Length: 172
Image 1 (cartoon, rainbow, N blue to C red):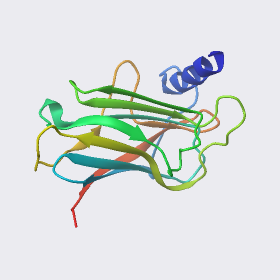
Image 2 (image 1 turned 120 degrees about the horizontal axis):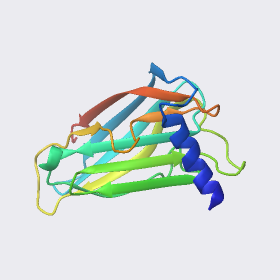
Image 3 (image 1 turned 180 degrees about the horizontal axis):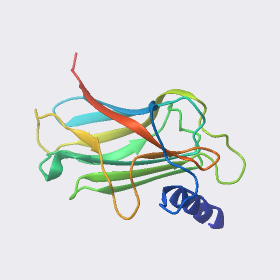
């Protein structure tokens, strides 16, 4: 439990305005969400990350629908993705406000390496609707109080603000 609290503290420290480490805004780091309609009731969103350097933690606050979406977030999974081995994967969903906060920390005790430089999926989000829907779902990054904005944290506790993109894949 103490190790978990330390990991959360480390992530919060990197987010704090009082943090001595500078924040880096870089288009070399990119988070892209590819939304795909599975059928009339289900949508899947693959969150991809491009990172030219190692990443130790990720804060991923997302919103959809602006209160008008017929979709709700059912689950997130990491199977077969770049973050599958991460020691801590948290998810907090608010279906009423239509936001999700995903927190990912690669290591809490010296057993797992940071995320290697590269590109590919880091999370898969599963949405559903109770009735058939033909409307698209728009997913965007957001700020979730008290200190949660889209952010990557390097192993040396440097905060990085990646570029963000979202797209809807046409169903074949």
